[in-house]
Amino acid sequence: MDRKTAESLFNRIPGIRCLVVGDLMLDEYLWGKTDRISPEAPVQVVDVIRDELRPGGAGNVAQNLLELGATVSLCSAIGDDSDGHELLSLFKKKNISTDAVFKDSLRRTSRKTRVVASNQQIVRIDRESREPLSPGIENNLCLWLADNVGKFDIVLLSDYLKGILTDRVISTTASVAAESGIPVIADPKGRDFTRYRGVTLLTPNLKEAEQASGLTIENEESLAHAAMAIMTSAGLPYLLLTRGEAGMSLFSADGRMLHIPAIAREVFDVSGAGDTVLAFMAAGMASGLDIAEAARISNIAAGIAVGKLGTSVVYPDEMIDSISRSHSDSDSKIKNHDTLSRLLEREKTLGKSIVFTNGCFDLLHAGHVKYLQKARKLGDILVLGLNSDDSVRRLKGEKRPLIREEERAHILAALDCVDFVVLFDEDTPIELIRQFKPDILAKGGDYAPESVVGGDIVESYGGRIEIVSFVDGKSTTNIIEQVLERYS
Image (cartoon, rainbow, N blue to C red; front, side):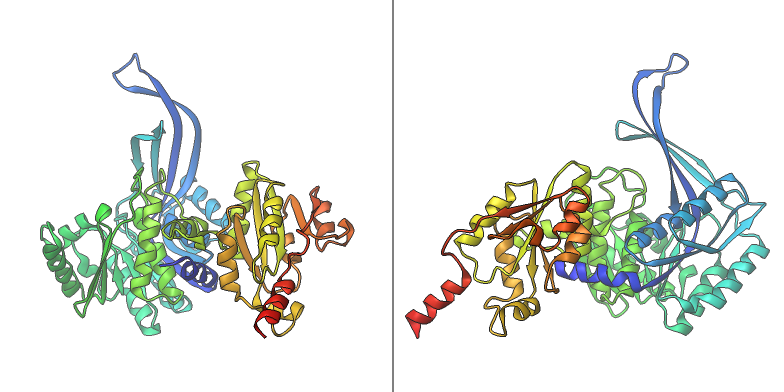
C-alpha cells in the first residue's frame, strides 16, 4: 500500500458508521519507577508517578475507529457501579454512542489494572465478570440489535469471553446483518468457532486457531489445513490469521490465500494488537478497500500498536508516516491538508518554528532553489504550498502549467530545504495559512509586507512576514522564451 491510497482511505472513513458489540472493560495503568526491594517481602517497590484510565476490550476497538474518524456506537452491558460509570464518562467525552450499553446491577464492570515501571509491566490485576448475560439483559441487547443493526455500514464483534457475546447475541447480530447485506467481523475467543457462523470474517491469532481447529500449526501447510478446518466448520467466507512476527495470512472459502509479512519493529506490548487489527479491517472494508488491501493496512497498524505500551490507539498520521518510510523517495514529504496539520501541531509542541511559503514552481530553476533555501533558514520546518494545475491555469493562462502538479510536487519534495509539500486548489493559500498557523510567512520578490496574502492572519497571532529576494533574471517565463527562440 502506498501513501496516496492510505490518505484516500482516511479521507473516506469519516463517512462510515460502525457498531461494536462485545465485552467492555476499564483499563487502569499505574505508571511509576522502581529502584528498591520491599523490606516486607522480596518484591519490588513501585513508586507510582501517575495513573491513567482507558477504555479496554470492545472500548479500545471503538476508540481506534473513532480516532480514524468513523462514527461509532457500542452495544454491550456493564455493571451499575463506579467503574461502569467511569467507562460511560470516557465514552461520552469521546462522542462514542452508548445508547445500547445496558446497566446490570447484578454484574461487575471488568477492570484490569496494570502496574508499569521503567517501561516494563510488573503485574496485572484483574477484577471482572465472566458469567453470561442475565436473560433480561440478553433480551434487551437482542431486541436492540434486531432494530438497529441495519443502520450501520459494518458490525464488529469483540469477544473477550466476559459473557456479553452469548450464542444468541452473535446469531442475532449475524442474521440481521445478513438480511441487510452488512459485513460482520469478529475477533473470536474460545475453542468453538462454530458460534460465529454467519459472520464475514474472523481474526484469530495462531494459538486461538490451534485451539479451534484441534491442529498443531508448525508450517504453512499445517497453517492452511487449520484455516480450512475452521472455515469449513464455521461456514466462513474469510479468515485472517494473525501470526505475530510472521505477519498475517488471509484465507478465503474458494481456496485462495495471501501471506502478508510483518513490518520489522521493536515489540513493547502485544496487548490490544487484536483490537487494532479488528478496527482497521472494519474501517478498510467499510470504506471500499478489497479485503486483501484491508488486511495489508491492518498489518501495518498492528506493527505500530505493538510498539506502544498498553492498549493503544493507532492514528492516521502514524500510519501515513509508516507507509511513507517504506518508500524511500520524495513521496514521504507530500502530505494532504489534515495529515500535515496534525504533524505541524506536534512539531509546535516540541518548540519548532514553522515557515510557510507558496507558489506555482512550474519549471523549477536555480532562482526557485535559492529562494527556498533562504526561506528554510528562517525557521525549523519549511512548508511549501503548491498551486494545483487548475489553480495555475487560472493564474497563468490555459497553456500553463508545463509540468503537472504531481511531478512538480515530487521535484520540490526532493529538495533538502523543503520539509513538506501540500497542494491547494484555490487561487491563494489563505485557507492553508488559517489551518497551519505558521510562525513565519515567507514571500519572494519585492512585495510590501502589508500586501502579502494571509499576512494579517499571521500577524494576528504573533507571527511575522519575511520578504525574500529572488535571483535576478531567473524566471519560468524567461526559460520559456529562450526555448521558443532557440527551437522555433
